[in-house]
Length: 279
Image (cartoon, rainbow, N blue to C red; front, top):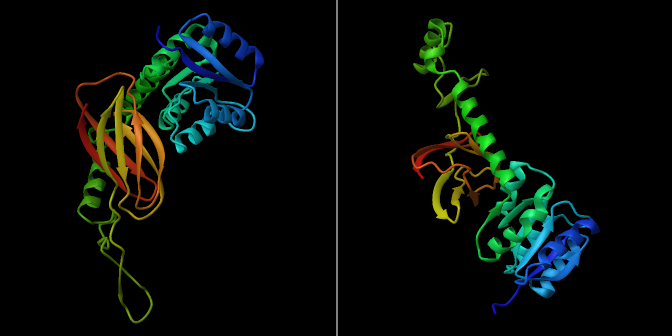
């Protein structure tokens, strides 16, 4: 007989813990070895009991589920994490994935899903509540609608196209020359040219396939810490990119697309990178 999968359950509502325990213990291949009503206690249980799976509520006193998971990751513990939440927000799912969580279960359906989620996660497979999949699909659809509604060059009036052409040729809208971007002028005497700093380079972007999606490597080349946005055909993520450092984004598309994706990484330090990737 295979060894039972050891779990801990952490939620600040005793009635939730009781319900989850009753459902899980009906299955002979699971064993609940500990319960916690706050994040700090949950972390201590994970460190001492080393369960195969930890079910963590996001909103707990003393330490949130995300904070506890971050400590588990920092300590390089082997326990897999299932996040339990009453919020069906896509950004929370993205953060859960970034913290290495394997499961994301919405409380309204937790009693029906927790056994399947625990089994999948213990086997190394991700699990996301179906209601969250619907939210991901809706967000992707809204992104496409916005993309299609943005004005193209063909939507500009003749006057607007003429002004745009003048700007591209280096002229102001009143037909006076525009100072080239390589230098600016000091109005004091004597007249002297002040060389502007070279434009900052956008981040590099590379990809590795992972289970259920992609690992996106983003590396700063500007030397300036910034807030950046990753956009792939309406699928967006925001993240902080430290100066001269790299960060990884775990991307799990709601709808696989076996085609070229147009990818843009734009940062608030004025840099951006565009690339195309076949997924």
